Image 1 (tube, rainbow, N blue to C red):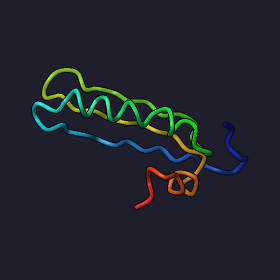
Image 2 (image 1 turned 135 degrees about the vertical axis):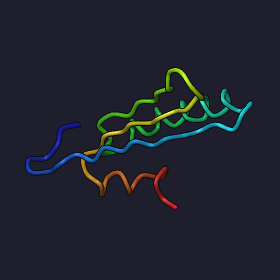
Image 3 (image 1 turned 90 degrees about the horizontal axis):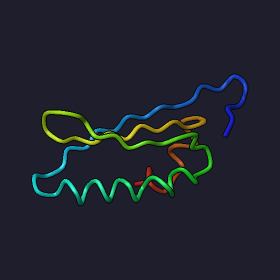
Length: 78
């Protein structure tokens, strides 16, 4: 997906701290979000990361064409 001229992309960074003993469950749930999110209109990219060292934490970084496209996705609606 290409950006429209004059538009700035929206980058999101989300931090997840699993409940002790539920690390594998959270990892799998987060992985399941990736493919449907990539298919959303306006999603440029999305990646899941795990912190190295220290307590296990996960991060999701996503890039969107603009804020409006990001907030219109089912995963962002309340």
